[in-house]
Length: 537
Ligand code: ADP
Image 1: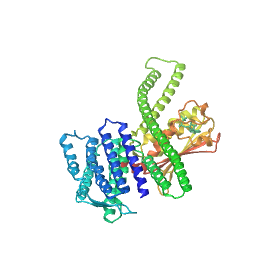
Image 2: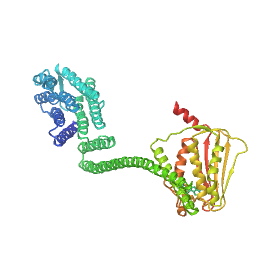
Image 3: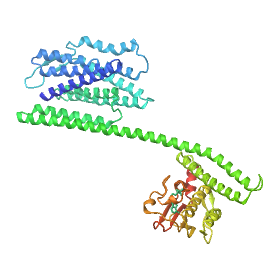
Image 4: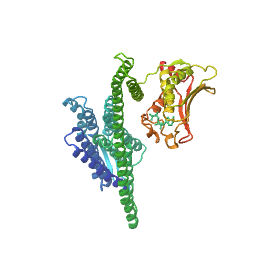
């Protein structure tokens, strides 16, 4: 009896407090006013039950048990009305209003009669015995039917709503289903099973409902079930501890339980605050992440536009240089020829860089197109070696190509893309080697899957352990490359992406600084074929 009284007081206060919070949040909004109505009705429901519990004589018990229904009678009507206000599907005309509220008004005159409650009897030491009248069953049906209609309306109305509204409606639906189930369980099933005073648990369920409605309306951490759960947990444990203060007999135990309750309130507050803070941080991080992604996309887009714009004038420069070199605009001296060679080299390098940047933006935007063909890879490598031979000779390096003794199996690749990869590797080997040689090798590997392994090794500057991990990352250049200004740190990144698109692997080995490096490209013979098949499929 004492425990249920304390719970009653807590539920009354909680309902009224939530009602006030909602009303003061925005008293002009109809939805807020309706929830206030529900909260006050619920509080009155619990209050009337409480009064029955503490009634001193039969008449008082009878009056209060009949008054109980006054608290509940409008709740289902409020709920349906709330569904109209919240979902705002159409304007609520007086007809709908009349239809919703006529039924509770029909019930109203029967409340003080024996149709509601026949009699109430105080039995000393026990909870009062209340005998329900015929109205009770009809009222129960009305209550359940109205609530189900409202829930159904919300279920129907959730479709096609924006994310926030969907979450709000979900809170309303789940809050209603949980509290309704609790209510039915207590007021019908337990009552029918003969559990005394089970009906007083029904009103307590309202607190779940009013809380869910309030969360939905206030949009308070709507998407964060974690914080809602933390709050509910702290609230429930708080109530249990509060009740325990009054249920112990000795004063010292009361002091002890009271202190535990106060301590818990303090730590509960800290817990909620820390969860709130964590969530706030998470939200900030998510927002920052979104902004970063947006910036990244903008960068990629810019890169693509800028590269396109750069390519045209560069090609024009190359064209004019070639025409001057060929003597179309008259004879030129050897000195000018050498200078034009340098212009040509520079624009060639710039064009390659622009092409790499374009490739990056295409890769990042997922717009890279592949044209897979069966290719004799050793021929492809031969043509690259031929192209770079002059560059290697200019640096007095030996460029050796170890061709396989017999033909390798044909491999399905995009030859232009793989050409770019190998060209980049040999070009780097020449760039980062001052003395010695650059050796290119290609071989076929058998195993679970047939593969082609291309190796480019040099006797150049080598790669330190520290640089090794960063090698294939975009815009990363090794620590020792300051001596080689021509470079941008995109070549290996693009190479890796292109090889991966062929289901292959690229990696490097080096004994360390000054000890040369070896780069490997491994391509499955049919990897791209499978890719292409899947794509076409
Ligand atoms: P870039 O050559 O334009 O700087 P890459 O992406 O092609 O960019 O290469 C990234 C880095 O990897 C280079 O800056 C260099 O430090 C290192 N690197 C690449 N190839 C070699 C090599 N053959 N020998 C030594 N270091 C290399």
